[in-house]
Image 1 (cartoon, rainbow, N blue to C red):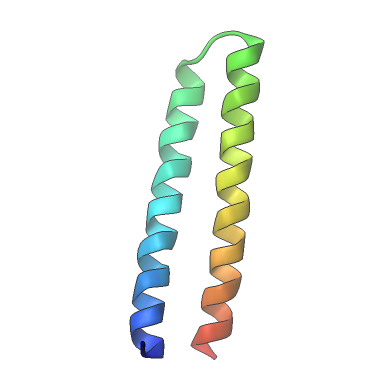
Image 2 (image 1 turned 60 degrees about the vertical axis):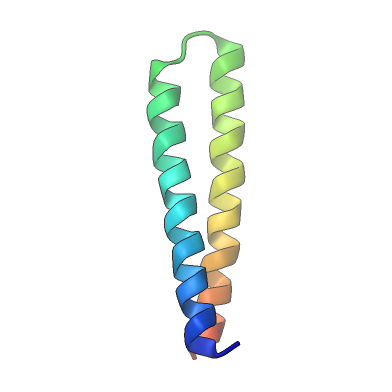
Length: 63
């Protein structure tokens, strides 16, 4: 696999994770109750961690 193909795949994964975060944020706004809010916050934090890893990986490949 070439670096450009890898970068394209990473960009697609990054876009998907960003969309997940956006969707989870919208859902969190509609939730009521502490348990729902905690679950939403946990899911968003997980997605943000994944995004950070992917962005770091992309930065390394782009050099």
